[in-house]
Length: 423
Image 1 (cartoon, rainbow, N blue to C red):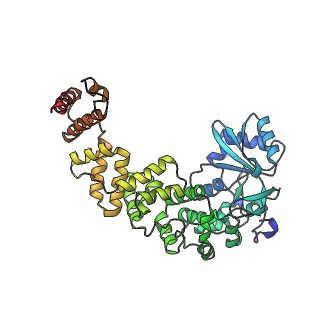
Image 2 (cartoon, rainbow, N blue to C red):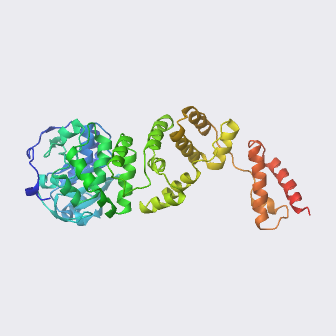
């Protein structure tokens, strides 16, 4: 969107001053800013770091904008002996690294052409034009290193009211990049305090079928971040009711288990788990779970975890200390806790969850004291019999409550090996 196409602004001058934040005064931040302003160029912090600072939330990534072209930016940083990585130089973005801390530095730009997935940009020195290409008003804030705050589209008002609103006409902004449709719901789940902006919501509903044009990687990133947002349950319910998920995740038909999981998680975990929440949403079998993982281009570890949890979510979790410990040993501590949470999401038996959680927290599963070499040492030939004998002794060891040491297990192995040789 060019500056001429931008909606009415609230003025190009600063609207106030933000108290200097800790992250603004870090030596690494000051070093990058000093390098970029060596020739008197104005730079500003932009995007999420300003939004989160104003909202009183932790700032994770520090993004800086400058009117200097990327070649000049790299020259300035290298002159200050700062490591530079051309992470997205065709779009005007480089990454400065100081003391292991990355700073994304982007040249002011405006969109020349968009196709719903990516934009061709041109560089500019117009701060309002750059802000006008941001998705939401709360993301269009900027701040100078000395704390002067700029708000061309009413982001401060929307942030205070808890309203997520597109910069400009919602349908046009979604046409420029369809991912903004998902981002609307993620940001509403993170910052929304009031009902969603009606015009924005209706645009998302009308254009939901375009989500199928997005790559799985982009959908996965937004979806998993949405699922861990504070109001994830309410927002996913809204998305389901308004048909947003119909093409994207037809395997999701209600949010009851997600709501139950969110309630259970607060009892045993400090932070929500995105993959586990996705599994709670899926009403499908292992093959269906694998299809979802492939569609979302999940990592191998995420795919394996997703399919394993769907496959095993009805396994026996134990009700006595002995039974719980056996289940922990058979599943592993982390997977066992995942399975407990999924079970609690369905039956909401928080007392059972806490009994099991105590065992997970206080008991470390021992390692089985035998290996294949112990079987071979008894003269058993290599082959299936080795694994069968080990499995037999391990079952005996588990059933006895893991109390037997290596010597006792070897004795049991000798008996099992003798029995194997009997005609």
